[in-house]
Structures are given as structure tokens and as C-alpha cells.
Length: 340
Image (cartoon, one colour):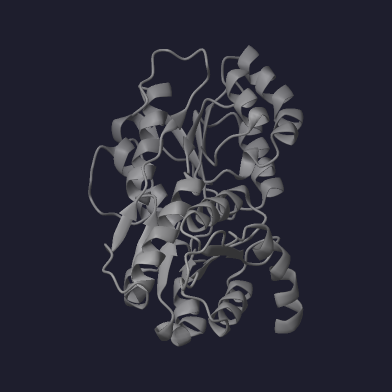
């Protein structure tokens, strides 16, 4: 099983490998790797490109390793085990299931400098990594909440499309959204007991939040179901899954959104997004989506390389390096600042 899986990983890694060019005499290039949740997702592709570009500038290499298709912690554990068998100078891991990985592959990680990126280990397992690079996910959730307030200043019914409840980044984003809309910085968790129930005019229907939206097809089905009920005023997706294929979003949801517009009951849609392509930007400018909030994959990849490089050279690193995000808004928008 491992041999078969590893053969699937090599092409993805090779595509994003920074090649050592013009090495000084006697210099030894270093080789690092990002362990992604899935190598065919735009965020991780962009993170891999950022890491490879930064590494190549220093005559090092950075690989992107992982399985394609729907993410699963057991598959990631196998990828991590294989990476630890290679003579790498450091690894950056985007965590799928903190406890499982800590009890399995991460037991062997002592000799290889390990950091996390995008999704951190849970507090009980954070002693296994040297640092974290990515968004401040709590603050990112608060920014998503601020965008919701811009579009619905009087409040309304909110539904959040979220990833796995096991992944810390998604739970922290949900927590941040609720904090911003509730108007409280209390360190509440993302569970059912903490759903919004009228604070500052905001509430969440019983069916929300909706989990396991990482599959783009499922995310679109969830969105369509919400739109057909006409019971929400704002929809926030904590990942880019609904717009993964912008043309499919337009085809499947465009007519439904147009009908809701005629009735003046269409919700505002806010999506945490990778660097949007032309088709995804067109969704904004055509009013099918109201705002994106950037996930900054490329910069997270660059900063991951820099932290790994310092560790490999025996230097100290900060425990966390946060990368700032920014909103993408329709070209016609002139009344919204760049910092919600």
C-alpha cells in the first residue's frame, strides 16, 4: 500500500520542486517539503509554488507531498511516514487530525525539524512541532464576521459552511465569526452550545453550521439547499470549496440567485478564497458572490520555507508567524475599506 501510494506522490512533488541553480562552491542545497491535506487543491498548489520559489532563490528545494482527492487523515499519516523516511532537512505539515497523527507518524518526527502550516496541531499536541505558519484563524473568522456586518448591518440569519470539526483552523474561524457578530471576545468553542441566538440581531438556523463542505460538489449542493429554503440572510464559507469550479457555480446557482434577487430575498455570500482566477473574480463583479477573504497560500508557502530554513541552520524561530489576509470585492464597490 505504501509503495503504491508513494508512486502517486512523486509527480505532485516534482511539479513544485525548486531546482538548485548556480550553487556556490562547497554549498550543499537543503531540501524541504510541505505535507498537504491534498495536492490537487488550489490553496496547496499555491502554497507549494510559494515555497518552491522562495527555496529556489536560496538554491534549495521545496516539495509538495500528499495524496490527491478527498483528504483523509489516514492517507496523510502514510504520506508523513514516507516523508520521514526521506533525508529531508525539514517538514511543514497541514494538520488533518491532530490526535491521530500525534499518536502515529509524529511519534517518529523527533529527528526532522517539523512545523505546521495552514492548520495547526491542537494545544495538547503542539509540543511536537517547532512553529506554525499561516493565518491567525480566530482573527480571520472575525474578518469574515466583519464582512457579514457590512452587508447586513442590522443582523440576520447566518449559515456557515465549514470543514471538518476535527481541524483546528476551521473551528477557530467559526469561533471568530461568532465572536465578531456576538460582540464578545470570550474564548468560546465552535460547538452547538455557542451558536448565535439573537445577539446583535444575529442567529443561526438549527441546521447550521454545515460541516464536511471540503468536497466542492457537496458544498454546491449545500449552498443550493440553503438558497432554496430562503431562510438565511448571510452564507459564509470558511474555505474556497463552493467556487473551486467557478463555471459550475455560475451554471448551477446563477439562475437560483437571479430568482431570489427578483424577490429581494437573496443572501449575501462570503467565501474564504485562494488567489482568485479570472472566472472567480467574474463571480464577484457579476454579483453572484459578494466578497472573498484571501487565504494567502503563496505567502504562507514562502514563510514556511523561511522558518524551515532557519531551523535547519540551527537558528531560533518564533512559535507562530501569522500572514495577513485581505478582502476581494466587486470592482464597483467603492464604499468598503480594504480592512473590514
